[in-house]
Length: 553
Image 1 (tube, rainbow, N blue to C red):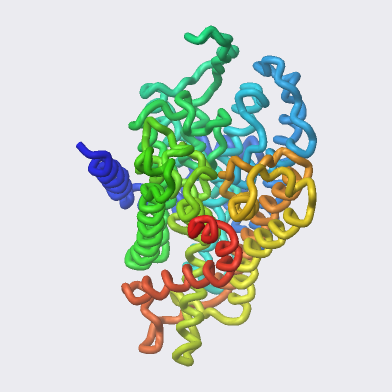
Image 2 (cartoon, helix red, strand yellow):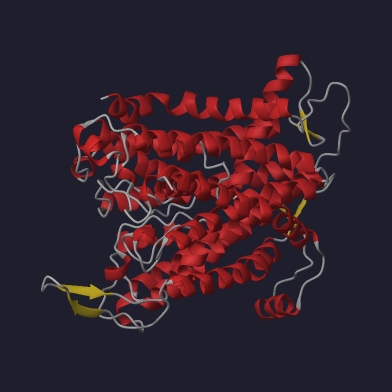
């Protein structure tokens, strides 16, 4: 069997599995968020924490809950990182420096999982399990809670209530993420991923050298790392490490895990708004953009215009030789089209056009299918833009799902669309002006610019992957990228919840002959065009100076 036939079968297998679970998982999540019944575990949890599960929060109260929870989580995780050296199972690993600790705490709480450290040498098992793995669950839960609040904004009328953040977060963790992660961890252990508390062991290699064999609670963190679109690896090599990703089967499993919730959420959306076709349109746009990016990266990485690439037969530099180009490209597109950031190959070693494509995936806003929750609410924001533009073109008041899209709604939408580009472009500009930031870049020319844009694009979009040629463990990058992660996560959430509140206060306007049908293929084409235009107009100059120039060279 040729490698490309095998690759096609792998891609079809992943999509077949996603199609198989799309309806049941999407329906389950819709029931989970619309049910008014709590199970025994949840009721006990609410009693211990004195949570009123029946309280219905205004959008501002919902937002305050999100912000308070995030700030407390950052402080607690920062404290754990600072106490790493005195906690059990530290194995003489030091406390994390303050600036790096701030960066790491913000990174995991914002679902970014940017890592300016090597996990196997920097952190003990206690911090990895109690600090990082716990935040993998909670940060994913926050994104899911926010998108559910936005959907309620469309479904509720003449009210200022969006639900209860604490209930949404608890149900996401207990009913969805924990059970699925437990099953995934069992499969990973059975397939060869490690799960132990063994101290690192020094072994003698066949060449007579010494190699340290690490241990750790890897499978349990790996499962939620992918399922929650987090991406932070237990080891520096991330999913290229055989203890995290032992073989071709686990590679496909991890790709499936990081895509399964985001690709099922459009079904949840359709069920909750009472029109499954609305969810299918959103899903169709997501799949189209995803497949377009995958085809681009596959073609770019299989090209071999240089002498070295001609000898290798393709762009094999930085690829995991166990998986080859197709599986590495599939992983790279999946991890940058979601907000995962995990890698099984080094994105910095991709070709100019291949690296530019995975960078563009993040700059699009990671909406195809995006992170857990964040991808869907980003796509719904762009759907509102599409409806608004179409309404202006025909001179009618735009409506989406029975809600009028006016000046108030568009102010929230415009703010949302401007946050990330401002962070990426201003951050990149600052890095080019600061000597210590320029010195941290190990390459030169267009690739150096791409590395900096990639870093700020990854942080501001809460992705977490990186171009390895950037030495990010400096005070400038630890603090600067940490601020980008924090603002890039919390400010868009605030704007999404404000939008949801403004929608929920309206009544419901029935469709008439002047209403744009948002459940037809024409709307899907318009939405696709808006997605491409928004990203293209914003980032094309920067992309032209970076990956496009490198690819043409």
